[in-house]
Length: 111
Image (cartoon, rainbow, N blue to C red; front, side, top):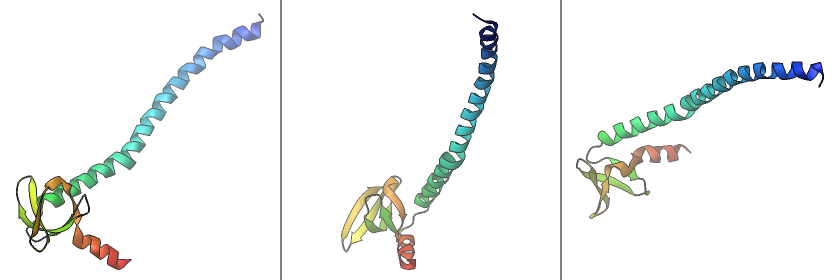
């Protein structure tokens, strides 16, 4: 063994300790970026959707998650009765209502 390898081996653990701190800083930054660009916008979108569902009124035109267009005929605590066509009515869960169809039709008209 020569003196150079002994010196390099003695310095190696000191450089590894500094790497541990930078690793944790990078992990924290990664989670911060994920929160700002993924989790926060998702929560905001969920709150807006919940507000929309709670403000539904009789006569509103809506679209379900399955793509069914209908008009709200009756609202209960957890379900909604949709008038689909003529006398055809469907009872759906409130959670399956995803958007207002008048907004969707306005967006298609602009294209």
